[in-house]
Image 1 (cartoon, rainbow, N blue to C red):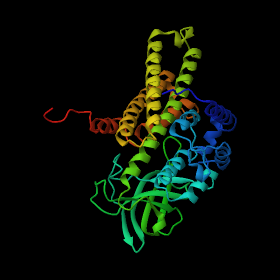
Image 2 (image 1 turned 45 degrees about the vertical axis):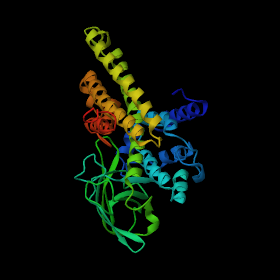
Image 3 (image 1 turned 90 degrees about the vertical axis):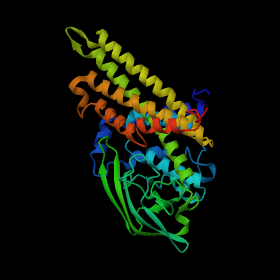
Image 4 (image 1 turned 180 degrees about the horizontal axis):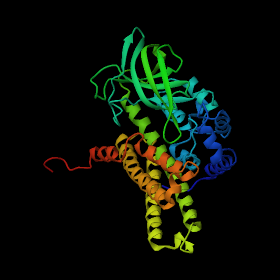
Length: 381
């Protein structure tokens, strides 16, 4: 597949980079992170004006029918700039609604920028297994009553509505019996505890106590939400891989500049062969991660579940490994400066560390990759 950007993609990427350089410089981002809200309404409006909220949405909802591949340069640019606004969370939530096919008016609001979404899927006991669910959804006439708790909900307190997974049947670990719901954050019984994560993003613990929902809140079919959940999670994972590549690019460039300017023994430390070898290793990890991220976004929209899972898990495993290596090497090559709050390198390192753990770490995705049909020979073969 040719991943050279077409004219429209290149124009959007260039416009986004110019906007980020002008309106979202590093010191501006630091001020946003340390503000009470942790996000900027002005920055969000800028993303909306650029058409980014409409880009991946279907045309009938006012979107541009963009694919995951169309979002590749967008997520890379946002990764370089360390964006802390709820763009990723909203696009991920919109993916659920688009796949569910029942919430056109909410998708229109997302495209217009008036509705932000968050995905309340993880639970305290579940680690990376999104099908490990104890939150319950009990049928109540034509609707449901939800009870449970969701943890580390990215931008949960900044959202107007949540995508919530709950168990309407089956056992705790079953993939059958999972239902998905669109839950307004101001619904009675919904409580959000907002906090800042180590990478400057926002997350929340969401508590659901006797939350009464009508039948219109259901996304997809009751008890059959796992295929939709699995597909939306793979889509989001592919976008995270693209964001990580952007962050690694910025970190590589910053480290290279530092090695060219930092003097030791009367010469730039970049002239020392041992450090050149380390930077060569960093470059190799970056390029391998870039290739795997491209593979992931190429398959993220695929209706063929096995190929999608295989490509996304292979990419997330490799990108997570690269993110850890690149981040650690960059911090070490910067010396003590690498961990200071005043230097962008430390912020890229923290973001890469979080991406490596979000939606499954390297070990989780290696195990998922191996578990796909066809990887291991059949017994007796």
